[in-house]
Length: 91
Image 1 (tube, helix red, strand yellow):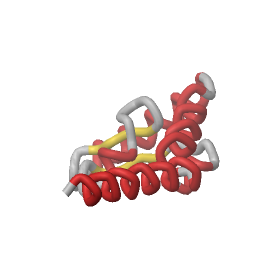
Image 2 (image 1 turned 180 degrees about the vertical axis):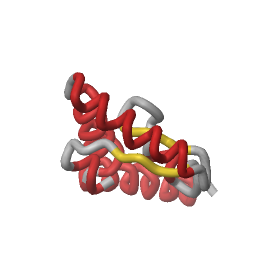
Image 3 (image 1 turned 45 degrees about the vertical axis):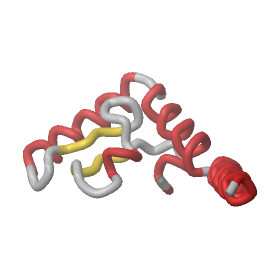
């Protein structure tokens, strides 16, 4: 997410939380797990896409702002706390 915050797309393997962070060919590239050929393909794809236009970089930045900024994470926590308080009050 640090790279997204700088408008730099990411390339990552399809494992853990990576597929939730990277939207394939929208703000980066998700490779097949433990597949060096696909990793190479992803790196080349990102570099070629960045040469063509800055859409990929903008999508990366937007993802960081919408999902991982202090404001969006804080808002999500606040909403969760409000739901928990409401649920507690209803019981």
